[in-house]
Image (cartoon, rainbow, N blue to C red; front, side, top):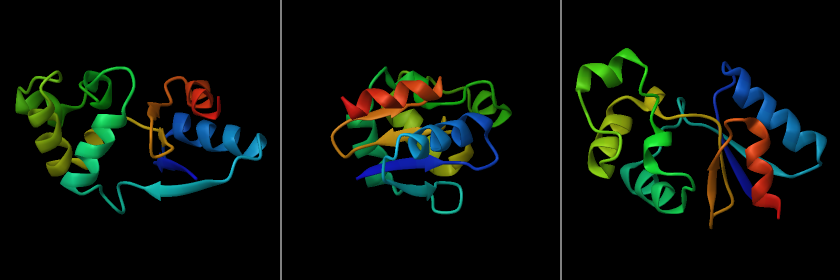
Amino acid sequence: MLTLLHNPRCSKSRQALALLEEKGIPVAIRRYLDEPLSEAELRALIDRLEGGIERLVRTKESEWQSLAADARDPEQVVQAIIAHPRLMERPIADDGKRAIIGRPPEDILALLD
């Protein structure tokens, strides 16, 4: 089953969910701000993530900028997101083998191929 790491306050995340619902795709929704990923879950997600780890971080957020971290360094990304879950880009669709950031939301449809 497809899991959507979702923030209902994010328009792109809402669009991704609506797109999956329109296609009739069963989806498990995980509100990652209410139920943050553990370190092990985050590391496993990074291993499945397509498009490069630097896309996983919301680098324009003040929390990220105050860390002066490197978005290409997996260890720094993991520690930043564990400490500040809102730094993780959203939405992310994950089928357990591959994970795709839905920016734009239509990108998640690649998991259906």
